[in-house]
Amino acid sequence: MKTQRHIMAGLLLGLVIFAGAQTASAQVDLYNNTNPDAVRNNPTSAPRFTLRATTTITQVQTYHWNFGRGATPRFIGISRRNGQLVGWFAARAVTGPGTVANTNWLATPNVTLPAGQYNLLDYDVSTWSNNARSNFVGFGIVRGFVPTTPPPPPPPTNDVAGSSCTTGTLLSPIPSVAFQSISDGIGGSDSADCFLLTVGLANGSPFYPPRNVTVALATPPGNASLALIAAQNIRNYYGSTIYFAGQVVATLPAGLATKTVSLGLYEGSYCVQVIGTAIPTTYTLTVSTP
Image 1 (cartoon, rainbow, N blue to C red):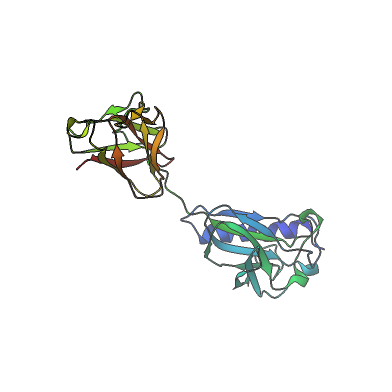
Image 2 (image 1 turned 135 degrees about the horizontal axis):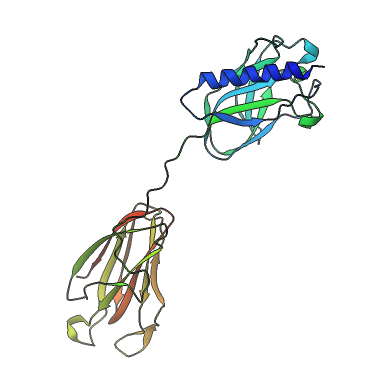
């Protein structure tokens, strides 16, 4: 069995090598179940660790006290929780003042793994150190860094649209204007931009069919959705109500890069609603009629 002095010296040496080998990135112990208590050989299970995001594994380390004799370094491995092997990596002995030769094994995988659950493997389980404090799981350390993700951009500052169908920004009426385009921003705390569109009678006659109108929203995929809502009761030329005030006429999800609604609209007021997501973005909204 080893003393507290032995294990602490060995573990500190590993940490010093880790800190000196990679100076440009914020590497950390992603997993560490070591402790200074007396150990035994042959653990009942291997360490299991979870990556919360895509992570680069730079170093893996295991401990082989083996009654003060150590063990010749072989390989340290990583597998996915389902048993699929990521790889075996050649280990070397890490020794220094106050340590016993061949007790600390260190390998440098330098592999980038997606988020998920993983196992740490050791080629010589029979001499792998563990104890009751580690729940008889083999001692292991996993080091690396999580690639930094730039923060999302702030909400656009050019937001001019109203946020509801009652306070929406007025668009030019149709058919007085055949084409109009608006560029604006959406996202974050700015959850919705609303535009009010008035559709007049085709050729001024109640007996003409509905006016063909196309509404298109261009954004990066996933950044905003589009909805067309009746802002008042909409009746056809027979006087029958086809849409009640507040009723959704058409919607298109955020996943599309260009969202286009083309349909016949009867006389009345409509609300064109751009619905943002957590990702601030700019967009272009166009409304046209033949």
